[in-house]
Image (tube, rainbow, N blue to C red; front, side):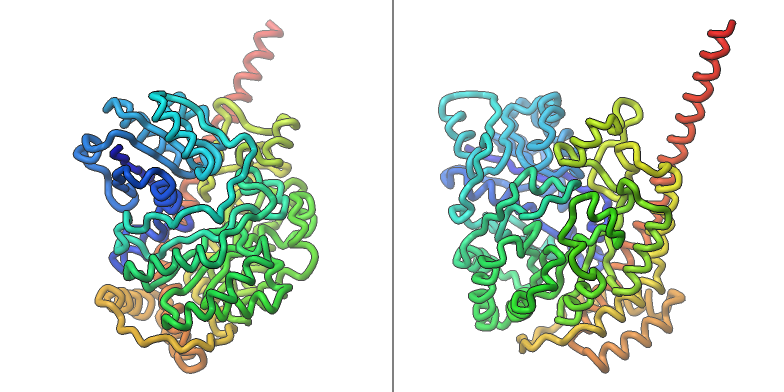
Amino acid sequence: MRVLLLYPLFPKSFWSFDKAIELIGCKVSLPPLGLITVAAILPQTWEFRLVDRNVQPETEADWEWADLVIVSGMIVQKPDLLHLIREAKQRSKIVAVGGPYVTSVPEEATVAGVDFLILDEGEITLPLFVEALERGETSGVLRANGEKPDVTKTPIPRYDLLDLNAYTDMSVQFSRGCPFQCEFCDIIVLYGRKPRTKTPAQLLAELQTLYDLGWHRSVFVVDDNFIGNKRNVKLLLQELAPWMEKRGYPFSLVTEASVNLAEDQELLDLMIAANFSAVFLGIETPDTDSLTLTKKHQNTRNSLLEAVQKINQTGLRVMAGFIIGFDGEKPGAGERIINFVEATAIPFAMFSMLQALPNTALWERLKKEGRLLEGEEQNEATGNQTTLTNFIPSRPIEELAKEYVRCFWELYEPERYLGRVYRHLLAMKPKPHKKKFRMLELRELRALLIICWREGIKRKTRFQFWHQLLLIIRYNPKLFLYYITNCAHLEHFIEYRQIVREEIEAQLAEFAEAKMKAKSESVALKELSVY
């Protein structure tokens, strides 16, 4: 069996970092970990060819080569995912689709013509798919029926299928699931509330595979909550730290975690010892009432500001997610988020309007209340930052959207952003590790010179840039490259905040036009009724 694995396009988003990635000659930040895991689970007597369309498009020769086409993606990749299904069917290929998007919403893939829906987690449903093919079946829906796989049996992903030079980071996964019950989150719907972890030996084998392939840069541990099972993650870190030390700390590790990470100093110290450099926190809002309403109780137990500061001062860069549009939210939520971000000096503050994702508790509640938008009024959940809410919020949508745009714009005003980067890095405790000296690659040196030109000469940030850079070199020189890297990301944010403003304002204009039209039709109907 010759299998063509296709990964759909991502639109521009907060995390796409297009302009920054271009500077170092890469194509995209992260590889399709799901698809290379699929390739590892399927029979290894099959042939595999992976095409990440974010790196380069597939060719007609790829289509002709394939006996079977497998596509996987997230909700934000939906348009291209459906396009690929239709392209495969036009060429009379058997096409199978899996992943989080179709697991939540399989109907549209079915309409597009998919033959096999491989839903839920692949360790269970991919063997069922292989059995169906062996029986000669040409279509079907494979489900786990509530069963969760034992991830200690998940094989090492097929990293050899990737063009490593195309990516800025590699990905590994240690756990699935999260113990919390945030109303808007679909992770607990997809993977459950009991975190399941791999063994330390498994993850070390995956990292060794990357190391042997020549990867010696950043690795993102993609768990939705890395510390969901604290006992097991500590066991991992206790083995990971000496592994990293023995090899000269080849990887800088990044992950996602819940804010209660700040309550466990042992865990923080173990992460530093294992060379974790950054963590993404789902803060959502500094408004305690909104956090309580959305059942994010773990964020209400202690001071969020103190939690961020403790994690940062321990030696981890903090990235965070924020949301506007919760029920009962008071006006000025955007300004309160800006104040929080400035107080904590978080450089990367991902900010979006609340979206009701399919099958979440929020989705079900809003559906019962008749507040989900449907038909022509529908704003489909995309997981992106350029979409209005897909439900009727408790505040007027015009007020909410204008506040959102203003907040996003101000957060990424260049001087403000660079100020946060500087304060955040300067507050960090330097890492104790002695890493092997590595000369900058030619593409990295080129990127450094471009950043120095743009931020230090061309833009009005020039004096701020040089002043901060010299102080970083003086007081925390190990963070010199982190400072430059964050400056590179500003290239993306300057462009993306403009995209957010334009697209949200365009949707507001459409909304106002539709509202005016509906009002005119209502008046006309009343006049006709009187007549």
